[in-house]
Length: 275
Image (cartoon, rainbow, N blue to C red):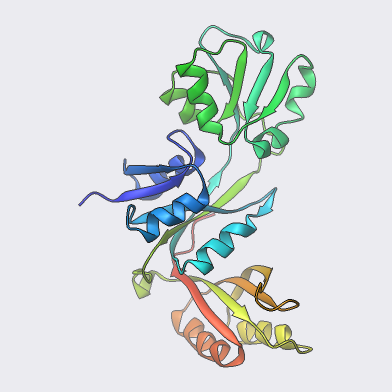
């Protein structure tokens, strides 16, 4: 049975690139206009898995996606770190000097703002999706309009790349996770990373005690993100990522933390992505 993967955006998007790279082959895609739609697709079994951006090395965490994973009881079964390259593209035969507008996602525009200082005639216009802008330029033959999008979008929609890697900060990485509806099915021998949700009693030193347990059990804390507990004003949930060399150490920490915490939830146990 062919695996169907839900992605946010359309073919030519960064989510599409991750799906191809992670599965090392072409997969059947379910294009979703929003992360809410993507989650619904997984819950309703329209897709077996989904690719979901979770954080960017420049912009930080995509906090609503943490809540979506938690509230819908999705399970993280993998991750992928994608180096982001923003490329300026337009219809064949056009030059940068021909452009009057460049459209893209607000984050892409912000990350490429410095490049356009040399082209004051170009107006930057926000759009919902990078690849969708590239598609509309091609299908509607929109002359004088450029797009900032991944290079595969230019290939898919027959556009010409006018400038490569125009982002101001070249070391720009987005972390994506692979989620599914049921509990993770990663082989124990391959698990060396976990994503956890921890809610603690509001007492002095409670978080420090948790961090000490992680240290004593030889866990490496790679991420900690707090989100308010909506039902209880003033209380916070901590979303934590840890890596480890031996599963038995993590297993020990997991047992201790589940006793210490008011609420302890495993969001995923999976293989740490290569940096």
